[in-house]
Image (cartoon, rainbow, N blue to C red; front, side, top):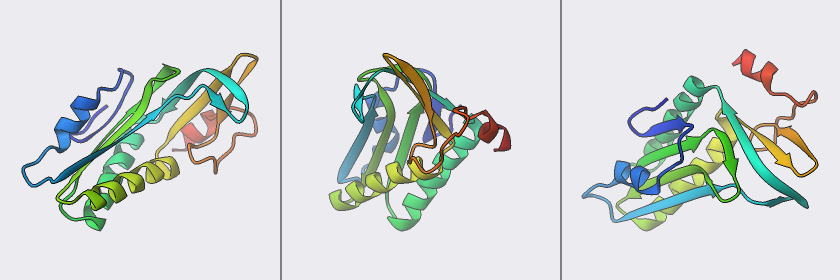
Length: 157
């Protein structure tokens, strides 16, 4: 599912596609953030990650983050793409592009956007290791799944 500037997709993310969404003659800077799948987390070797989402709500939350950024830093443009499905080590899970007339604002807005994604967007991550797997709560790590499954939370949203 996608809006003009924000999307949740099972397709591999393309940096240039996200950057093109924020290009503007008024921009003096474009910052990008690419969140990738890392091999090692807390001493465990990850084989791959699986992301699931309540997609309509996730896109709505990405739009809200874009609105928050535009309110806090007028003149910015924000595009966010988040991937779902199985991702291998090194693949991009999220790309954020922010354009602004000035570089400091572009950096600040980009950092703000990734923290808000972790806090509020209903996207869940399952880590697959060599000797097991586990659903990780929300991306900020502030919600845990005692039974190891996000289904109850997904049904409530």
